[in-house]
Image 1 (tube, rainbow, N blue to C red):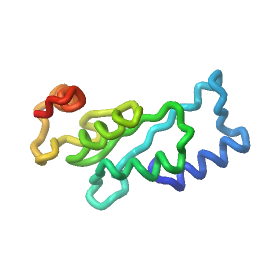
Image 2: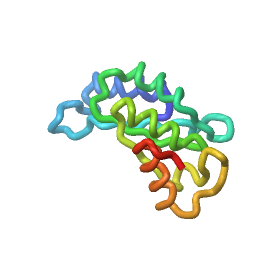
Image 3: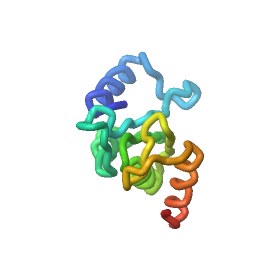
Image 4: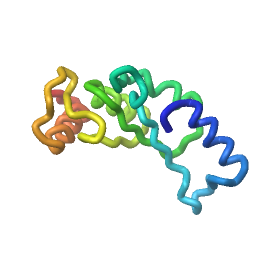
Length: 119
């Protein structure tokens, strides 16, 4: 979901039975995409707030985030119970705009941040 308009569309489809929300339907997880359509594809942690406000009953949700604040956004989501998607598909650089050496180094840096040991 890229914005709250997408959430409204999801709600509509759920109400009409196009998308089923029962656990056995396995359609209850959503992905919030932060920063994809912002200027310069840059996200920030507060971008998550409208998504959670518009879909407070989402039991399984995850985020991905674009730009140098990717890890800060992911850490904010983790603190709020979300799952995370990290990697070069969304951001090549760290918060100082330095390119990660590898995708694995980006994942390792996020792990360190989540464990309270930011690089």
